[in-house]
Image (cartoon, rainbow over all chains, first blue to last red; front, side, top):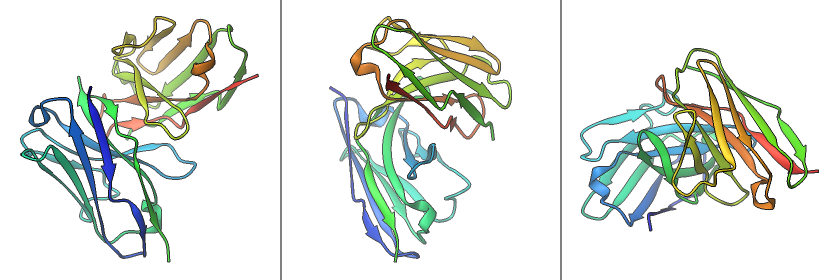
Length: 117
Length: 107
């Protein structure tokens, strides 16, 4: 069974940093592009970042470019999102998702990030 | 970026009834439109991809149609487990974007 499990969320002050992890199992990790998608309270889902299976290509939403860094360790079947210079508008649930036929399938359960003083 | 607008915001129906959810794109997305179901506290689940293809394990009561800018998700006969929030998503243009969601609630 394909599973994705996020961790690393929590409460952080504005301007602070946080690193999210997504542990994968049940599939050949290195063959798939993986993405981070977030949802702020009461808002629509927002794609944040993606990384190709080899790690050679990365993509970012304009809203996080220069502040967030996506990475992966294929030996550990884990995807990461390093989030720096956090803002209140970065608050939300962060999901990792595998890209299957360029669609997000499946998704993890999500980890909550709260940016507040 | 492409903006997706879903309607209605809330749909109140009873089990056994037919549900019709709409998604309109601000630009032509060809057939690159998908639908996700999200229940409270759970991960989103892909239902339909490329307008009309059911994802693995999705029951036949879920179907999708449309092209260009107007798309529809139809649930032919609602089961109790279908009451959730539904999101459309386009992958025609970067970045991928989502609609604001339709909440399907029990009447």
